[in-house]
Image (cartoon, rainbow, N blue to C red; front, side, top):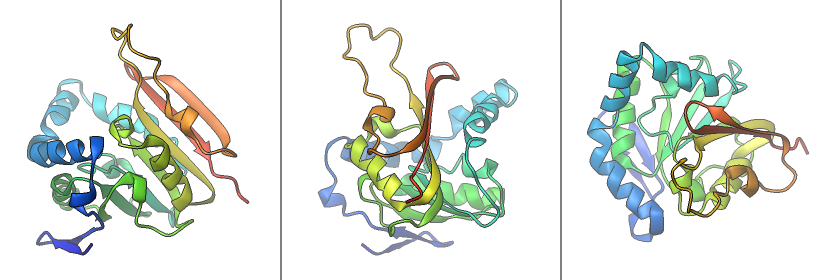
Length: 216
């Protein structure tokens, strides 16, 4: 769909906004609007908790198998908050539906002295070839995607055979006792995935799903 010049490096866009629908359309509008101030409450809480946000992020990110020459994709990269804590020697790629969030991510990366190639697109239609990345992960927003199962299938598609994938997000709120049982991403995995581990005890009400794409 072209490239968006943000004055530093170009954010590559593969999103046709006219075709975005459902929850993705709502997410696009909301995150474009809140992007400039998105980091503030997290930074404030991290300061007040003496690094609580950083510790929580690292509890997930330590699950990733990142090597010096790894190609790493974060789906729904947001403002890039996770990238600052990952090894600097790997190559990073971030995709998000919101151009506003990607622009904020770009500014953050410059401030942190980090590098990543950024792409605008939908998680359900990743603009990458099959078996491209050594590591693929997503943290925080999958439950608001238009099609979670398709997004997970796409993450698996672009991961190399044998790659470890990580998906983290929120469990059902405790007070929603009348709501239907929540279908976790673990139940949406394509058949054949290996080393599936699902844990609901991270943080206050968070889960962490890791699994491996078959080697053949």
